[in-house]
Amino acid sequence: SQTIHQWPATLVQPVGSPLSLECTVEGTSNPNLYWYRQAAGRGLQLLFYSVGIGQISSEVPQNLSASRPQDRQFILSSKKLLLSDSGFYLCAWSGDVSNQPQHFGDGTRLSIL
Amino acid sequence: KNQVEQSPQSLIILEGKNCTLQCNYTVSPFSNLRWYKQDTGRGPVSLTIMTFSENTKSNGRYTATLDADTKQSSLHITASQLSDSASYICVVSRFNAGNMLTFGGGTRLMVKP
Image 1 (cartoon, one colour):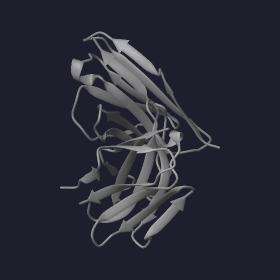
Image 2 (tube, each protein chain N blue to C red):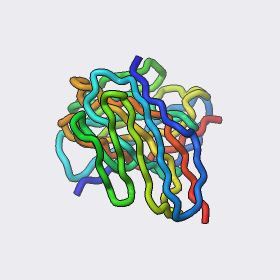
Image 3 (tube, each protein chain N blue to C red):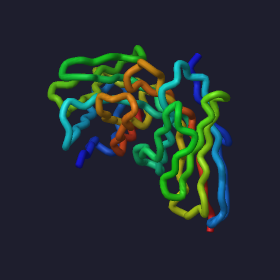
Image 4 (cartoon, rainbow over the protein chains, first blue to last red):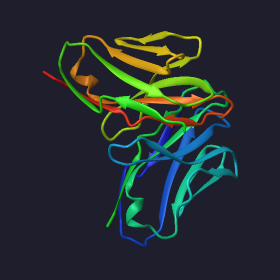
């Protein structure tokens, strides 16, 4: 069966520090991969999605970036974190067919001090 | 503008009671509508997916309905349990937009003993 792993579960970082969040999927090949941010009491906001290795689409301009160095690995990065980057970051994967559900990891709660 | 609105924002019910959560959307062209359950601090988990031609779909004590003409959906929870306490998120997918989703802000349900 397929599983998705995100780490770390929680992270506290100072303003201006770099960021690297990792997401890996097991049990499937060539998944679509997604990074979302969820602010408290708000809906999920799509940040990046990828349909293949090295293919990244950005939905919202910001100081975050994403990379997909391997088929089942998706990384969210920043060179310099801002206070506004605090939030709950979720990685998800789906198959290629539009009626398939997206499967979410358990998220990373990022607090910027 | 493609939007998904959910009501109520929060709801408290007693264990064993039924409840109904509402979702209205303006996403067009419509492909499918999903309901997710999100426990606090965890990623969302898919409950149901309904396409244009489906009016109702059940998953255990959860029953989702869809009226594609009025662009409304509901999620009915029968005989609530304490473990039903979570946020319930309505999500709509646009036709020909791959697996890109528009998320509602969720309804936070609390089931009390």
